[in-house]
Image (cartoon, rainbow, N blue to C red; front, side):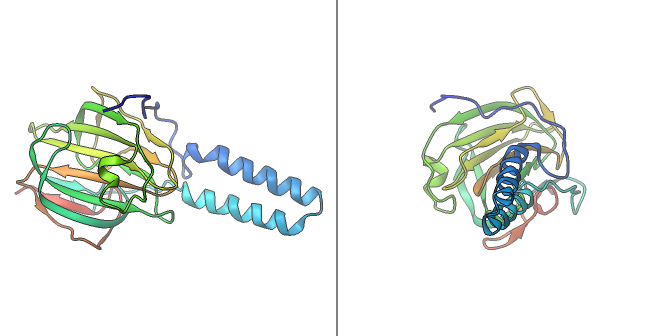
Length: 223
């Protein structure tokens, strides 16, 4: 994989609105103020509306899982695109079940850890920016993958994938770091996709078309 840069950034303070959105919000507010001072009222209203939308997009709510125990939680808000029980993990080639989740611009874009685990590897890939709901987005779009291992030695892969509008993937974790179930680990700006690869023994609790919530909806269970 091409490693032109890294998606890693140290985790900022977690606020109700993600810190990564502050520059965009500030620009829109300054533009609204400038338009108002120039008596361009319509433009001021438009820019204020944009500032409100960007604030909404970068919202960062508190979440807790619907269930405890040996479960896998959704890493992203959005709609389940597909569940593939005959997939192979992209970086280790193991048999897995792949769950793909599409995030529209209306979804929360802060991503959360599906299991309590340690990061074994992190792989960044430069790539294209096809619509994230397309199958080829998994293989060709810009992406950042985490290989995870839980306390029982089970391996998972978690891939953040950029979309048509999304041009920035942020990941707060690097190899050797650990994260708890449902904790924040990054985000993708302005519409994107997340692919989760689970061990084949996990029973899947979601189906294509279902809406899921990061850090809350149970995606899979281990008996």
